[in-house]
Image 1 (cartoon, rainbow, N blue to C red):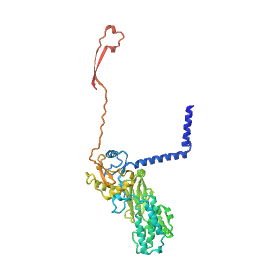
Image 2: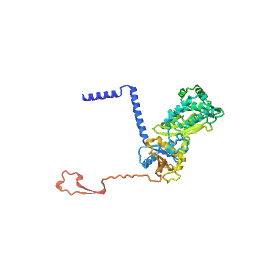
Image 3: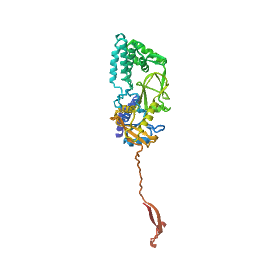
Length: 444
């Protein structure tokens, strides 16, 4: 009776947690559990020390090598570590193209405050009729707006697309209100064989990716201009080029898709089996978003000509990181603080700011000559924006020997003789009773 009661109680509670036979509820519960596990894994990875591994040229040892991982963990005295490829450090897209800004002051990410600033100026400009300003005033307005466009220097999220789209349309409208002899490049450019209003064309390229942006326009003339270019894009009037994600002529789509999500101008895109994607000429902001919660490579491509039929994103980053960077690190390999280019220090500063949970725990590791047992390790110091050597590949990594000791006796000899027995004791004895054995221990 007691057993029956317990069984009923268990079934009742199970029914409350997940209705029997309700497949939809089971599916929902499974999805919730999977989402929680994914969030926990992402949080764990976000807090793990990040080690960017630079491959030695013409060798294969990389961030997946098990021996290298153990040696690096020993060198930095960390067990919770995320190992990453060299390309993740390349941050050409997030870098402000202003040589007067030191690496430590690079903002890394377009602040949300810029959105409100642009929206305000766009509304003010949109309220001005074409006959309220003369040609020179409209030219000055176009230049001012174009400078403001650089405040959205990298589109890594969808929230930046609408303000940039509206800004492009107002730059284009301002340029249209100027005498045709006053405004040339960069407001009017040749795309293929066609000279056009470049910023209205850029607005059309954003609308081609995201048609809902056209609903944000109020001025009929602006709508007509952007729609004209949009229709030409759809008809294939303008040339295109390929973005190529192959590295050293190799692309493994399944492995790549498992690690990264690709964003072009803040929107996710898919590449083909060769790792390629056709794009329109103009501006393309490229971002590899790490699916485990980190930030990967960023790049900004601006192309108005098709001299190059494709742009190799990963190969260019690889050469910069695994050839140029490694050369600089090993120019004076015994120095504790290697001297590296400002561009690379900028990438390191940006990378640290994009991973604030572990910005004091970002390391660079290089297996010299591809040997995973000869690994140089440097830690990036945020305050001084410099690299500091943690371990030299010339150092001996600790090796532990283990001995096993067994105890016991081993007998290596024995003597036998006849036992002395009185005649009266012979009754009932077996043959073995007449022998005397004496064992001699040979080892202990």
